[in-house]
Length: 297
Image (cartoon, rainbow, N blue to C red; front, side):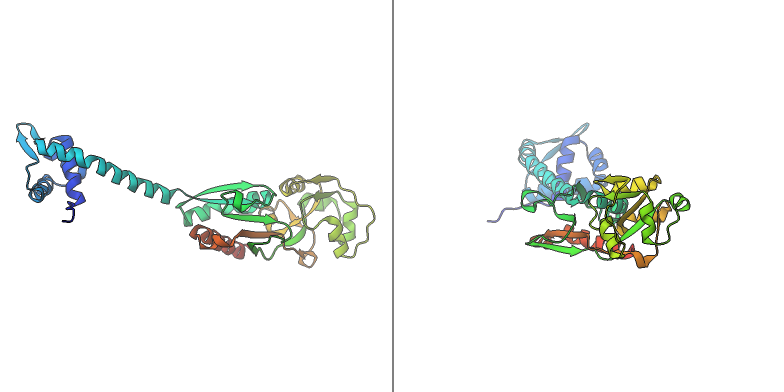
């Protein structure tokens, strides 16, 4: 004979009625009518063919068999509720773990995370930043935004397109320094970004400017510090057009030359293990980021 399982609603009503010892209070706690409570109890008693309550002057009270039944099912109801809450919390708190190059994380990703969160509120976002290429097999990282030349075997890598090396300066710097062509930069304070793929020597060589000894007013190992230095009118930088967007849009930095002096670079990649393609959260992030990159060209 198969086990007989009463309707969950009837069990919930029975539990609340036993707790309050009152039909009206049980109805209020469940947001249903007192007659509905009486109906559910009557249905459960009919199914069990046992009397579960008897009436008192102040309400209702469990019979002996009713107390035994309550003791037997209370643990199961608690387990069911806990399991349901656990699943709900897991769905709400599923973590998307992103590792990113620091400047990309600070200047490009962080200002746009609110958009991603609104589109995918079910994810908790964890972001780690460093220039190191993390080992996916030794971490819980889902996707990595890497900076540098592509040389990662066994991983899927999507290049971020339409990124250029661009020369930038504060508007006041350009008012004080007349710069019409690349060779004029040799008379200016240059700021070096040590991590930038396109260094000043390469930029000058690309534009056929011969140099022997090149000196810098400032040199930084983080691009965001180079941006800040240029923003404070300390010199000229050659940096990523992608990362420069917020400074250009705000007018804090402006391109020194026209677009014909911009040099295309493949600097950033979206990297992840092949097996991560099957994860919905990874696909959601990649699709969203690619759309953002397309819209911010």
